[in-house]
Structure formats: structure tokens, C-alpha cells
Image (cartoon, helix red, strand yellow):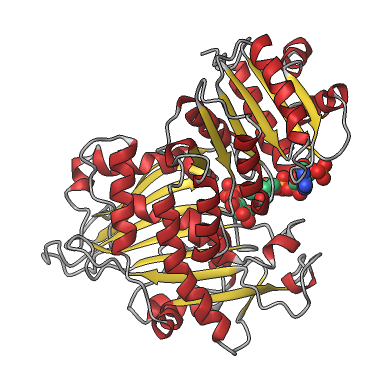
Length: 492
Ligand SMILES: NC(=O)C1=CN([C@@H]2O[C@H](COP(=O)(O)OP(=O)(O)OC[C@H]3O[C@@H](n4cnc5c(N)ncnc54)[C@H](OP(=O)(O)O)[C@@H]3O)[C@@H](O)[C@H]2O)C=CC1
Ligand SMILES: O=C1O[C@H](COP(=O)(O)O)[C@@H](O)[C@H](O)[C@H]1O
């Protein structure tokens, strides 16, 4: 409550700041986490004044606003300083304003820097924060950064090295907004607070694990960035592998940051690193084409008409450890898919049950729904009502609507609060990011060397045929079949 802190937001005039950061800070203000002792300096090159900046802030929170007085009182904590991060002399002004606000709001020297800017600026900002005396060592001093954290292991390491010259790992908070989502945080509760699942969470009982991050939207206004990234780097390298590591890790000795990160890193390191040949066998990609109401990816704004960038990626990870030997972890993520749906399906083996019945057993599937609905379901075999004896699959289900607004502001709000409290559990740590890049680089290189044209899939479908073949060749099938697409394709 009433955190004492000065925030400095670099990139204060940008999209991320407006859509995510200001609303999240306002939510914390409404809850009393931020009250009298906080101030925000917004910086960017454009020559705004405080009043204009405050109007932008007010506009960004209008949907959350109940009382105008409360919103204006919140906005009065915001100050704008025009600043080009490449210009050393500008940091003087920033320091003068920062020192004044620290005294005025009695922030006890605590500072959080949020870099809502392109990663190429991170190094230069960190360097100047130190060289220009903005970092004083008086209170806590933390830096929060957004993805993408590099574009390969090499570039991520360079970026990390430049930050580590100034900040310790404990001071760096790398956002992966999925780690702020309610149900992702619930994965550990499901696993470790329920003996029925913890006892079965291994190769003896689990046949395969499936992670789907499906988006119905296309690239929207982000074609310029996305065309240099693609689904593999945009989603699999970070969000999907984070979720996979939470599902696969061993139980931490203590449920705290250090132990959880240690176990996640161990799990990531146990994931098999493929050769290029194996990567082509185990990973597939696709690009969306026209659909009835949608244009093809390569006709989107700022996308090359010859683009070979994947808007869909799917793959199979194998984890070489005692618990998971032989259990495939299938992942898929794509844009312009049938519907928005992020979910985990844990498919249990049917053959470990008794063979008392002549009916074929439906496999037990534990589903964790992340968005747009949150909750769990468990498919079990029951008896068909009526005369005779036949089995009938039944779904035990608890689901409710999650407030869904893109990169949900709630996730950012939780992460902001964690950063203020110095809790790093729900952030990506360097060793996790580094291992994820090592795994992903191989797939990317294999695809870059592959001369075959990229497979396609119609907008609003569940991806290219090769994504289904990937599981079919192991005798498996995607457990989540969105009704609409499967009805249309006669596969229900
Ligand atoms: N938008 C989103 O939803 C998400 C964004 N991200 C990442 O966050 C970062 C920011 O994204 P986004 O807000 O969309 O980008 P924008 O292009 O909207 O904003 C970039 C900001 O940087 C400022 N800027 C650019 N150059 C300089 C400079 N030399 N000195 C000072 N300020 C400068 C711009 O202001 P000005 O022109 O006035 O200088 C602007 O405020 C990117 O790395 C992006 O990948 C990650 C996840 C989601
Ligand atoms: O990080 C990203 O995530 C969004 C999807 O986030 P969600 O919270 O809306 O599921 C994705 O659209 C974007 O391409 C990617 O950069």
C-alpha cells in the first residue's frame, strides 16, 4: 500500500505506454497501492508539456475512470521531459527533474525504469543512467523491459551483457506478460496442490502434453515488426516455452523465486536440442492466406508480398529426463486461427486403466483454460444412462469468462506490482531466455536453410495440414478441436 517510488517511462508517447502501462498504474492507484508518494516521469523525443501529457494519460484510462476527480488526481502525478536517449546532455534534465520529484513525493530514493522502447536503446539508456548519476543506490532501483529480448541467442546475450554492466540480475525484470495471467500462475496450484494430479504427472500416466496459443486476429498494425519475427520468435521462444517449463519442472523445494527459477531452468535445459534435420522433422510452419472476410498475410500493411514469415508454428519438444522420457510436448501458436484460445491439454494414457470393459476407453484429458475463458476441465469415463452397460465420456468442468483485452492490462498490473515488491518469480530470467533461444535458433536456422516455399493455411482455420500430420505420425491428435472449424471440415 502507498508505495514510495519514482517511475521513469522511456517511450512515454508510444503505443505500449498508452495501452498498457498507464491503465495498469491507474488500477494500482485505485487499489491504493499507489497513493501520495509516487510520481511518473514520461520521456520521449516529441516536445510535449506536462498538461498535454496528462491529457494523454487521462485519455488512456477513460474506460476505467469512475470519478473525474480521482482520475485527475492520478494524472497530476505525471510529468513529461522531452529527451532523446542518444543525447547525453538530455540526461541532465532528467536527473534534475528526478531529484526534484523524489524530494517532493518523498519516494525514499526508490526508482523503477520502464523501457517501453525498441531494445536497441536499452544498452545506451542503462549506461547513461549510471554515468549521469541518475542511479544513486539510495533506495531500490529496478529496470523493467519488454520483449523482444533479442532476436537470437547471440543478440539476446549482447543485450543482456549491456544491461548487466549496470544492473544485477535481481534488478532486471524481463516482462513476459503471460506470466502475469491468472491461469498461468494457477498451473503450479493445479500441479502441486492436488495429490491426484501430482501423483500422475509423469511418463507412466501421461501420453502427451499439448499447448495451444491460438489467436483469431491477424498482424493488425504490427506487420513491420512481425515480418521480421514470425510466430516462432514472437510466441514460442518466450510465452510458450515459459508455460512448458512450468508444466514440466520438478516440484521446487520451496515455493519461492529462486527455487522455481532453478527448476524451470533445469526443465528447459533437459529439453532436447535438435539438429537441423531433426528440427525439420519436429517443427512445422505456415502462413495464412485469404479467407472469406480476411486478406492474406502477404497483403497486410508493411508485409512483403514475397514474405516467407510464418504466422503459425507448431512443434514437438522432447524432455530428456526421468520424469518425461518418451512424452511429447506438442506446441502450436498462430494468428488468424479459427478462434482465440489459449489452453493446455494434458492427455493421459488410457492403457494404464483396467481392461475390464469391451468399450474403447476415452482418454482422460485435463484441460487448463487460460483465455478467453479461465478454468479447468477433466474428461472422464462414465456410464451411459439407461439399460445395459456402455461407457460415455463426461466432462467435469469449471470455467468462467476472463476479462479479455489483448495483452490484458491485469497481467501488466500484477507484474508492475511484483516489480514494485521486488518479486521476480513471474518474470523471465536470463538463463531461461538464453536456453529458450538456443532451442529456437536451431529451428529458425533449419527453416532459413530450407528452400521449400512456406506451407499455407486459410485464414480462420486451425493451421496447415502439416500441423495435424505432426501428431498423426505419432498416432496422436490435437485434443482441442474448435467446434466451428471441425464442423465445417466434417471432422467432428
Ligand atoms: N505495443 C505493444 O503492445 C507491445 C510492445 N512491445 C515492445 O515494446 C517496445 C515499445 O513498443 P511500442 O510502444 O509499440 O512502440 P512505439 O513505436 O509506439 O513507441 C516507441 C517510443 O519510443 C520513443 N522513441 C523512439 N526513439 C526515441 C529516441 N531516440 N529517444 C527517445 N524516445 C524515443 C517514441 O517517442 P518519440 O517518437 O516521441 O521519440 C515512442 O514513445 C517495443 O520494443 C515493442 O516490441 C512488446 C509487447 C507489446
Ligand atoms: O507477445 C505477444 O502476445 C500477443 C498475444 O497476447 P494475448 O495476451 O493477447 O494473448 C500477440 O498478439 C503478439 O503478437 C505477441 O507479440
